[in-house]
Length: 430
Image (cartoon, rainbow, N blue to C red; front, side, top):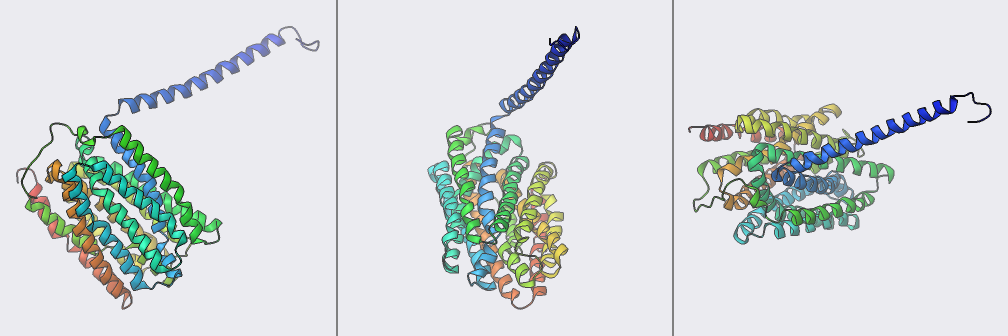
C-alpha cells in the first residue's frame, strides 16, 4: 500500500487481481475443456469415419492443387497460342485418359491387392506435374502436362474409391462418399480462389500461379503417406466378412453406365467454358477462377445434402438433378455475366454430385473384391463418352453456341429414362 492509498485499497486491488486471475483461469479452463470435448469426440468416432475424414482432408489439398490449375489452363493455353478446338480436344483427351486408364488401375488393384502402392504412385505423378506447368514454353508442352495430371488421377482413383467403399458401408454409401466429395470439392473451391489471388498480386503472371501450387501438392503427398501409415488395410473397416463372388457385373450396372455416359457427353469441360468467357468478354480473366470456385462450392454442398438423400430415397434423386443441371449449357454459353454465374453453379452441382453418387450407386451392386475393377470400367466408359462429347462440343463451338447448348441439353435429358429404369430395378422387392 502506498502513502496515497486509504486503508483497504490494496486489499481491494488484490481481490480484483485475484478475480481477474480466476476469470482468466476459467477462460483457459473453458478453452481446455472445449478442446478436451473435441478430442473425446474424435476418439469416440468410428474408425470408418476417421478414415473417410482422413482421405477427405487428403483430397481437399489434392483438389486445391489440381483444380486450382484447371481453373486457368483454358486461358493459359489460349495465351500460348491454342485455339478453341485444340483446347476442347486437350480437355477431352485428358478426361478420356483420366477415366479410361482407370480400367487398368482398378483391375490391377483387385488382382494384386496393392491398393495403397497404386494409389500413392498416382498421387505422386499428379502432384508433380501441376507446378511444372510454370515451365511450359509452348501450348503443346502444357497440353502434355495437363494430360499427365489426368493420368495420375486415373491411376489413384479406383483403388482409393475401393478403399473408401469399405468405410462407407458402415456410414451409408451416400453419406460416406458425400462427406469425402464435400471435402474434395471445398478444396476445389479454395484452390481457384488462391490462384485468383496470386494472379492479382502477380499482375496476371500464370507461371507464378502454377508454381505456387507446389505447396499444397507437397502437403497432399505428406497426408497420403500418413493415411497409409495409420490405415494399411482399409478393407478391415468393412462390417462383416468380405464377400467374394465369381459372378459378373449385374445387368443393372450396364444400364446405369449407359445413363451416366449420356450425362458425361453433355458436360463441357470447364477450360472451354472459361475460353468462351474470355472470347465473349462475359467474365474477366481475374473472375474466371472465382466462378470456378463458386461451382466447386455448390458441388461440395450438394454432395453432402444429396448424399444423405441418396441413402434415404435412392437413385431417383438423380432425375430432378439431371433436369436442373442440363440448364447449365444455355446459361453459360448464351447468357451474360449473371446467367453465366448461374450456369457454372449448375455445372458444378451436376458434375460434383454425379461424381459422389456414382461410387455410392455402384458399391452395393458389386462385391467388394470386384469394386476397383467396376469403378475402373465404369469411369472408363464415362470418360470415353466425355471425350466424344467434348469433341462434338468443340466442333459446334465454332459453328453456333445455340447448337452447343442444344446438344448438351439433349444428351443429358436422354439419360433420364435409363435412370428411371435403374430405379425400378433396384427398388426393394424388385
